[in-house]
Length: 176
Image (cartoon, rainbow, N blue to C red):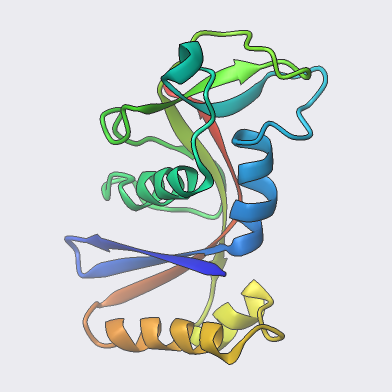
């Protein structure tokens, strides 16, 4: 599975952000939603819902929705760049899902708080073929490859600049 986010800017520029399925399913959800493999010493920032004194876990679908929404609505004045950066987003975007720090045993050690996403991005130079190669999806269904090609075809010639990014890692951090 590959999630695609289009960030259109007023300057005839578009950012295509690809989130490989393993980032969401094997890294973000287990640690930051299901609270599996929490770090025994460091604080672990996890998403929470209001139920159970802000300890209830959001569903996987809600977590993916928040992940996509937070990336999609990063203010367009903030350019995406290669490397790991904290990208701010509106605290009003998903007011019913916040973050909270937990210890290695899954016990809360902070109050709930608004969060931003710390994202590690890799820039892809090229269009569909380099993107498919960078996503390492050559062995996946032809439908996934076709979806990526159709995405590029749908924006071809409509924007002066296209920038392609692949999310390599993402986790929530306290909003400043």
